[in-house]
Image 1 (cartoon, rainbow, N blue to C red):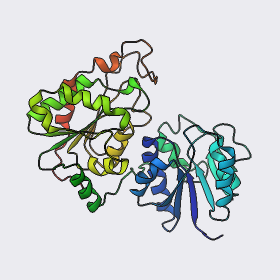
Image 2: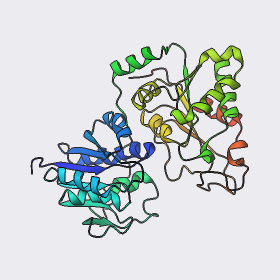
Image 3: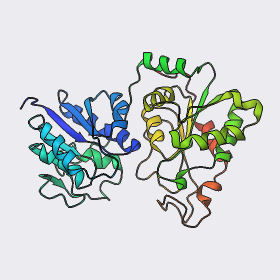
Image 4: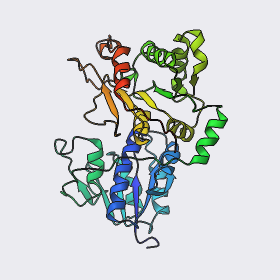
Length: 348
């Protein structure tokens, strides 16, 4: 083999899941410091993986989310033959096992998922009670089958380069002179994870009144939400609120988020990025639960109402009222923010 100590990881398709995958990478490096870890994943994940020191390289899987692409997976697999000792699969889908199979990687490790007998030769059966957290399910694949996990797992930790951060600050004409409250009001999964714009605006208004500035992050899909929050502010406060949603690349968003003194976020990919940057954060939960994919940081305040109907794990409220978020008032989040430690040093 051309690379005697190399592992190919088939990465997940969601931002938060990819952040949590770093726990697996760190465990692999703890066991074999000289191992080379490459990740096959969607193109969007490249800047995220570039900020994980454990990853040697990432390769684009040029398929749309959910696309089967049998011929493309076979071609990629053939191109990787002879390069890896092991493949570790984080998705549970049948199609995700095709590349390692066609690459003829000797050891192919993953959870059974969609009945992947034959495609995997180190196939595991998941005990959800034994491994309730996603990071535990990822971490178990770093060890031989039935290994007891360490009592303390490492956390994701993204590395920021000073020159790239400085370039992003200059590009968007941002200053770190005043404390920064970062808002992450989007949620790719659906509206049942999104705290209302009016509540975000109330929090933003109070913190601006206290002398802070507000940066709003998100994807192009989150622009209407971000702009609505800014428009709900008194006109005199809007110059202290910077909408970055839909403007920054993912790489720039990661770097700029590292400047935040505090973050208020829905249960989203940006929540996990903020946690991996060790930013003090308030995580607002509605239809989902922190019992499966909690933010992994030193200073976290989880705010939720815990109604009888939640968590329902639905994209939209099945009862039509979204009380789990509508009735979670801004005062709860403001109180949680006041409980967070004051972080003076920002960025790298």
